[in-house]
Length: 409
Image 1: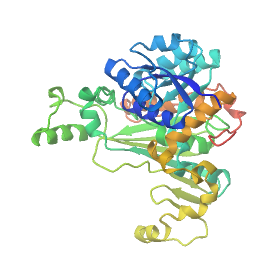
Image 2: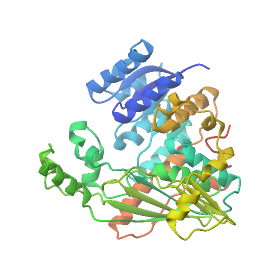
Image 3: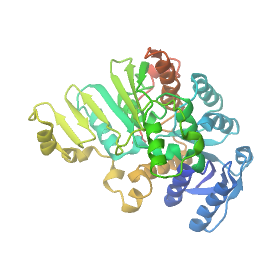
Image 4: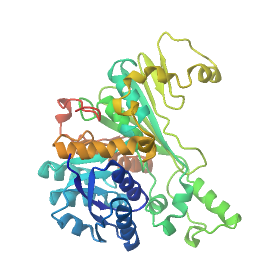
């Protein structure tokens, strides 16, 4: 299979990681590397040279990437604010798009993204890597096979201590800092929502109708700044005494047209270990990622959670027949490539589908529906938890669109 001629727009921490995985796949030819910071451009060029022995062109102006006739596709992994504007510019330039995740800033921008795709029809894939993860795909295939019955409820979290990353945002030139200072919302919904939306057939026979969001107070970031100051650690002077807008915990409840309920939780401002707390609950049973467990009707119940953990911990292994083949044969190198292997499979899939001319499994309608949760949650929180209608970006076509998953050909 020929290699995809790619231009990388955004070479911060995430862009660097995605490039490293792309290099491992041996499915990409790097034509250009772009970042607004010159040193990051040079780092990206060196990254390619060290692995492949050639140096791609570099620029701090993404329009030069889009104007390059050699570039057939772009990876967009820059600041959240620029994801949609650059994606639209790329569509207008006729470039295929791999768009890194993040919430949108306005509802209108999501409509603009969809309109641009409907006008240009360029290949577009939203890079929600958790849709490729082992646990999420196990639950997805079990749900499709009816093991859990009719799915009624699903939940997930982005539970990740980001205090250090946020507080060091100025020094690391990271966009999260300004978001946490200025916005109060479900700012990163798609890791948990993406797999759930696939399971529930969102945009393909089902849709999300409305949401309500509520946030706790914003205490964690200020407390973390104070602790660093007391410990004699460097803190950006502008953050000492600063008021952060982002609530420590944000809960978002989404209602679906077919009767299901989704719960999302953002938890990034307090000390904790990483978790996505992924749960899928149906009329015949439940999958819980935290225990890697499946409970189906007829099995022994345990009133004590310690007894449940003792008997059910990792019992999902007995359902491994529902895992896709690529997860059964994964290598250590692929596991180490990024986020436990899911980045590798995602980027192989994008390249393969682009070269073979097949449709992308996570399309522009998915991107818009999942990203719009952020501005709607912001509005709901500001209005004291008032419900917000979620637009139908398919304009009614979701009713007839067939289900299409990341494992489908």
